[in-house]
Every structure is written in structure tokens, then in C-alpha cells.
Image (spheres, rainbow, N blue to C red):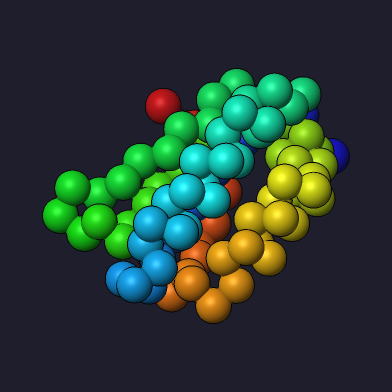
Length: 98
């Protein structure tokens, strides 16, 4: 199991008519996630041209702690609250190389 720092870039595209719901639910994730063990940063961004596009930029001290994060109750609550409201969800697991 790698203990190397892990960067996550998560892309969320909300359905236009559900944008504010998705945004509100994404914002609810920030405080509990930042308090989790291993979270270095957890920053939410909204595209200025496409307001339906949200991006999380996250850094974790290890893959194991990020994987633990992915099983937390607040993420399960987000998934339930936004069911049918998200058009696209993509997670990229990144390693810093320079």
C-alpha cells in the first residue's frame, strides 16, 4: 500500500436545472472532509464559463486515507441527495511528478 501523497481531481457536471442543488450539496462536503485524517486540502471550484461544471482539487497524505474518505457517511449522503441531478462524474487520481 502506497503512502505517497495522492492528488485527486474530481469533475462533477450538474444537470442545468439541478445546478443549485448539486452546488449546495457539494459545499456541505467541505467542512467534514477537511476535518478528516489525511486531508491536506479539499477545494471546490466552479467554472466561470460553464456554471454546471464543478471541480474538486484534493490532496491526501496517502491513498489509504483517501479510500477511507470515499466510504464516509457524508459522501453517501451527497450521492443520495444528488441522485439523478449529476450528468457526469469523473475522478482522476494524480501523482505529482515535478
